[in-house]
Image: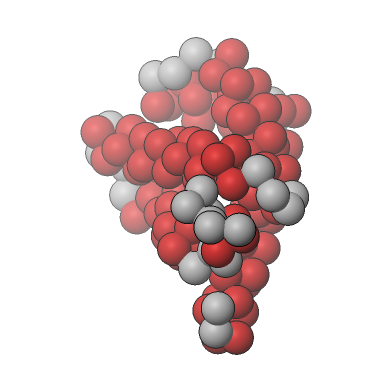
Length: 126
């Protein structure tokens, strides 16, 4: 793996982990803003707890060494959660400021996944 690719991977992964962990914690503690957002999007409040737990577990899975299949599942979960958030905002007519966060996290998910080292891939020959 090229040094440049390693740097891209770790920067994207660090920002992804920070973003998912931060939003997961906010969802776990169920701030008034998060509860209002879920109501605005038409989702039940209990979904906050589910999203929070999966985000936090996903961050752990992406950051720890080994377990490449678990990492694939975590990346897939991040992809589904963020693309779902984007679609949810679009469906109810929200604007760019509401799309920025999930769009950024979606891009970071894709960049981190694409640039991950061979040791973090499921088709690793070693």
